Amino acid sequence: MALLALLATSSFAQKEVSVKPVESGPKAYAFTIEDCITFAFANSYDRKSMELSGESQQISYKQAKESRAPSVSASIGENLSINNSTVADTKFSDNLSGNVGINASMPIYQGGSIKKTIEQNRLNVERADIQLEQYDNQLSVQILQAFLSAISNEELLKHQEDLLKTTLAQMQQGQVRYNVGTILESDMLLLEAQYYSDSSNVVQTRINRDNSILSLKILLSMDPADELTIISPNTDNLDELNSSLPSEQEAIETAMEVYPNLKLSQYDVLLAENSVSMARSNFYPSINASAGVSTGHRGFNSFGTQLWENSGESVGVSMNIPIYNRGATRANVKKSQIALQQAQLDYEQTQLDFRQTISLAYRNVVSAFNSYKASEMKEQAYNKSYHAYEVQFEHGTITAVDLLQQQNNYLNALYQFIQDKYSLLLQRKVLDVYMGIPITL
Image (cartoon, rainbow, N blue to C red; front, side, top):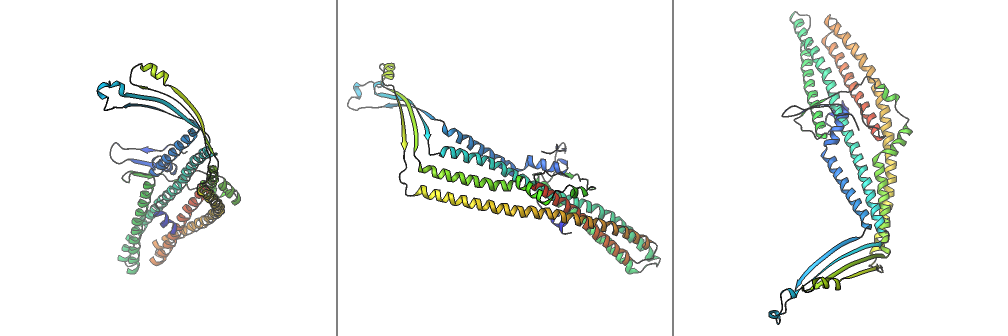
């Protein structure tokens, strides 16, 4: 029951989503696990926010690439000057002067900082894509947990409802037999207590199922008022999950190549390496070229002639040589080197931790399969035994205590079987996610 309780309280490119909207009010949906994931990817607010962050990184990257191009600006101005001693003898237009010009500047060499800035932005763009992939994996696993919780509780609920009909019949039969004196009052009371206990179990399981569906709606960014029907997968061929399982080493190697968490750590190292180069670029001189054209006038007499005679062009090259900035550049280089060493250590630790994680996940699958097969055989055995005891109780050869003991044994075996079945599905699909395989049921 531990896994069922855990899943029941969990708040954690595929085929087209099957949507059945109503004309007004809440909408109705019927989803498989693939539909749930597709719907969540299209509607998750957190995911949309991450996509916007990725678009912002793309803009920064594009802007960085344009930093090699020249910058061009134009200027225009008019000035009015008045001399109080001659204002009465001077025309207003003669006191106006103006100028217009176009200036351009272009970096020629910046110690490699432009190239490294472009590279830094490119790495950030790729890292943002991997972060989105990481989020998708995490969201998919959370959806899987809530989905399996809902269908496990739905399956358990069907068994409990069927059993409730049986215990109701047993209670009614017990009352009749007590009235005719063929069973003791204690047996009749035990049958009544079992019926009310089973009724309580049905109510609790229904609540657990509804809570799981609510958790699933939240993960899908779906209105809680909408109706969500989950389409249970076929679980008749779970043995294939074991037959298709790769070796542990193959699973580790595949996961190490594709899982985004490890890729993020790799990009952190690349970004740190680039930051060292960017810090070192401040040791080198920077060279810039500039050019411009300008003209002006004073008054409006012979305006065209003034513009022609006052026109001029300029072109130049300037160099800025860093000599001493109180050790700031050297300190920044050392800090970036330390950050690089830290990123490399983090990457090595992430590799080690991830290998252990995959190894544990793989062994969890193997263990879950063995538990599933054992509980499957146990459930079948107790099911046959319980039905045999039912027949004996109907013929009056056993007491209610014997019957209810076998019924409880069967229920415990059934609960364990359902738990182990969906535990196997969960563990195997989590391993698939690690290996870059989309979740399908």
